[in-house]
Image (tube, rainbow, N blue to C red; front, side, top):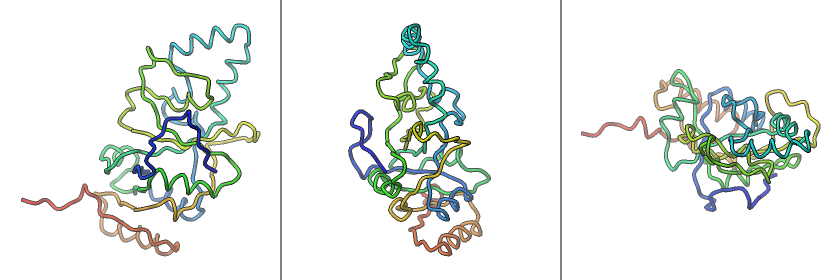
Length: 233
């Protein structure tokens, strides 16, 4: 279920458009099982995920002198926090197509913050929070640690292009052995507003995607990518 935390930064407009770019196998998995995959935070490519900036780390080290378990907690905590990443943007992103899809194949789910919040209400086992990522200079700027989610809502400035918003859960109290991540229940029909198919995909691939959606019992609106619009002279 989605839990509102006023300390976590998030756009107030529920109609704020968000995107998720993914390959066909992940999309089919999402539709077939109607579950959203959330990755273990320390499995992301960025090795700084869930860590602190240098000024914050120096402060934590001072606190850890009298309480050695304080630092160990943050090191192990990363294994129990799971994340689903989304992209905030009014329009499609050419960069996101390039990064998250391959061989001119893949899809983009268009939704809104409000739809995502409502779609998460289906899952009653775990608590999910949603927050925008803050991009900072890890050598100079401070990351607060009065909220256990804050280390996972800050990234280096070199990742600013991601414009990321995250669904985030702390599963520490469930004593799970999390491998790569977990799947949580989600209302697919509430979540998905439109589907965009890769702008450079072949016609057979577009037909395959639409046939798969229909056979799985969905009728999502499928939009032609703005990146493949006809050239007007």
